[in-house]
Length: 150
Image: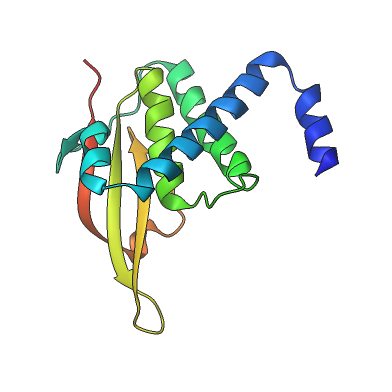
């Protein structure tokens, strides 16, 4: 762990800031998850709507999508709380919202190999899956929220 802290301290300030931002929003999502979903849902956007799936015209936006996806994968491994699909999707949505990039969060359900009910969340921006894409095809979408930027 000490090695990871030293590596973090060696990062340039821009990288440190995005790691800290991801850490903050993962924590924010975890706290909000513990409360009523209806209060969180209000901040997620328009229910049962989706944002457009076109590739962004701005190459910097594509780069930012990839960067946020990668940072969340790394940071979620080092939080002291659980930071799985739900926290990652909500954190990514909030990070994209700060950058004025539209996104859609999807919530799905399925049955595992033992027949137990399982849920999953993932985030899409344009044609890109930012978080949770590895297993999304195994789930049936039951709800979605679109965050449009005005």
